[in-house]
Length: 339
Figure 1: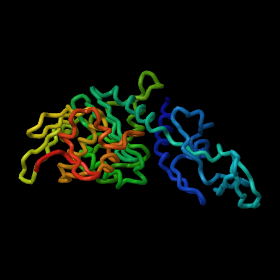
Figure 2: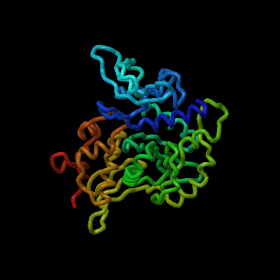
Figure 3: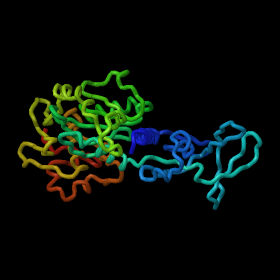
Figure 4: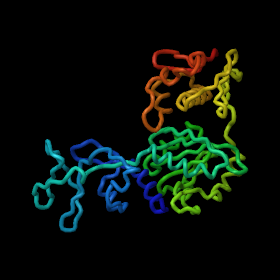
């Protein structure tokens, strides 16, 4: 993809959160076909079929009459692949095909994998472990640059509509590292917690063109300031849970995915979802929250798409996991620690 196409794709990913409100239909998030054609200059959605997926239909239609653009409500025609609307000027009933009110979103899985592929070649090491922290925040993995320690990499979108929610999610994720953001949001206008280093995704991907123009890459010069900051505030290598007296009752090594509880054999956690749940339990216990509902665990560790909906099924076949994670009461789980 050339720089213009990359910028368009990032804009489409950001705009996929836009809400389209119809007069008689539920709100739908996505990009209406008329904006794909006019705003993004895409001749047909099929031209971008690798990246876009249709997610429904808008309850409105962008209708032009005598040079004026009107948003008019549409109504289904039973048994037909068309909808009808009333011209606001002549009151005449007109019809258009469903393809004229189709709504599209960027395929999250394909977009995130493409971003990871584009950035990981410039890291000395990059371990991808993509997961959605929320509808706005994605954890991509952990990377190491020349002269820096290992740090997490996040991708965020929707800064203009959900800044506080994004900030809360990043705090909950203990996001001390690199945060790539879509859109034209100016992160420097706001005060962010120490250790959060923002870079605009488009600049990171296309500022320095590679030898082969069709392949996006990162300009490592963008990270020169990052290296020093990463050394000052490196990612914690080992997480420790302490009781009220300050005694360590549990430790977790995020590098080795090793959970240690005194009196029990150390447990190496396997599987991205299981690892995410254990890490979440450990992080919440460090903040004094011992019991976590299954709903919260599943919601905060769900993958980009799909995934198991029950805790036991996630840990099935992963050793004697109940020795380390206890079902404390109906619908709640905690680390199996004696306090």
